[in-house]
Length: 623
Ligand code: ADP
Ligand code: ZN
Image 1 (tube, rainbow, N blue to C red):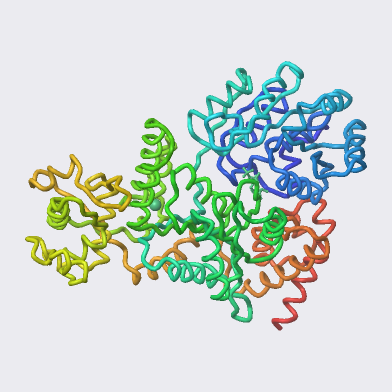
Image 2 (spheres, rainbow, N blue to C red):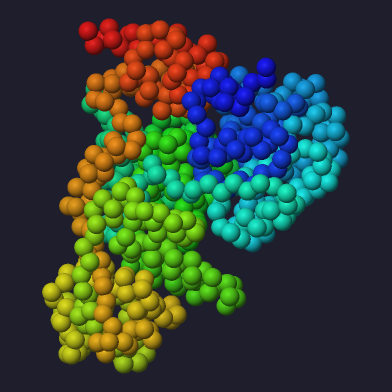
């Protein structure tokens, strides 16, 4: 009898059950139908075309725009015993010929190709000579002309339907918006496809957004708490892999240098570095344990590393879409991960100025402004971050219990009086024509700080001088930031960041409208938050019991050595989830390994004995 998809999932991949709609998508393809799949990063898209490719006659042809990803996917497939190969421009003619022959002979279950290769006559002739099980179009949003990842070569893919009408096609993306979904369906001519839209929730990612204070110190503290959560047998923190995003190349360089000086294994990455340096950095991130990459948004697409434990943003992202895509690179293995963002007043001012100065037309600037507003609303919300995020993608949800606002609900206070004090000071400063004042001077006047500038301009004589002494300068910055975020203050386009009132603020000044402000979570409660978060996590994700830790560390060491010997990334040998399961179960016989997640037939055969030996050795060490 022919094997079922579930048989393949058990035997080859060593997983016990399908996730979400995986089974339905696979059934659709096996039966010869088309599918359009929207699933978040880490949702498990790969299996939905890999398993049908193995079950249908012929080879599954996977179109993937990212050479690095192709290579890793093929390596991961071979590691579980699936015959797979790729064709791309990095190969020698001999290598290519070998792969081509294997395809024609029907020896491959999967063949990965780059989109630009596909439209060439040579490739089409090759494809005619072999038998095709299906076409899988990965990163299908690249066909969308208005998206940020548009690839002209993707447009050609609309021809597949005509050239191979009998071959089923599946288009996959992690981009969730309605507009992209429509464009994929139309441009790829997938009118008869079944549509599968998964939940975009990533429950294992904890979202935290903190007010920016001294961001480099905050970042180091954050990274240290991440690393301290995993302590090895000798009490030494195990470094966690992470990505730190910043807007400019200069910030990237400086931050990476600072982190290194603090003893954190950090490397910079941005488009201004040599291709060879970038490649080397990427490889180290994939293969070494605990590397932290400080990068511009140039980094990430196509980095398929499942065990990234945190993603930190030290500058405000430009849109919720971008933020969600970047944070989605954390915790693809389903284990606990953290998305951390520090944002402050200067970010809001800077982004508003960037939009004002941008060369696009008015409609473009308006769209950018809407993106920024949505991002600010997420930052300032007093409700669950996840509910806010998912509703942005049109999905309703309940408070999650795993974000900062759920774990430590921020206090809200009536900020009408502070807002009035601040707005009327803005009005008074504004009357002095020809002068520009940023937020700093405004706050000096409010708290009554006698700076040279204040004295020179005689601002200590203003009626509002010193009326804000009930709040600290830091608290005032929080008030300015929140008024900016909610449109009660605006940044003028004079290039100095001068603040001005808006139509909406008039009602506040007249006392017709009240203002609710969020009490910024101060540092002490941030530490409490981190502790509580750890306690809470146990409920949703299997934590390792204390006594299993030495064995887990021994297994990690064995994995690192094995990966080095075979020069593959560690996760290709086994994922963390598998090592955790082994450390908890302490198996002594091969049969006991069979039920463990991530251990299929090939890996059982290849590594089973070695795993048992590590378990036995660890028991002897403990005795
Ligand atoms: P995506 O391409 O959607 O970002 P992947 O296909 O890379 O996600 O899958 C993410 C991780 O989840 C991989 O490590 C994969 O092996 C694992 N995975 C996928 N499906 C399952 C499943 N049914 N059970 C357990 N693990 C799974
Ligand atoms: Zn929440």
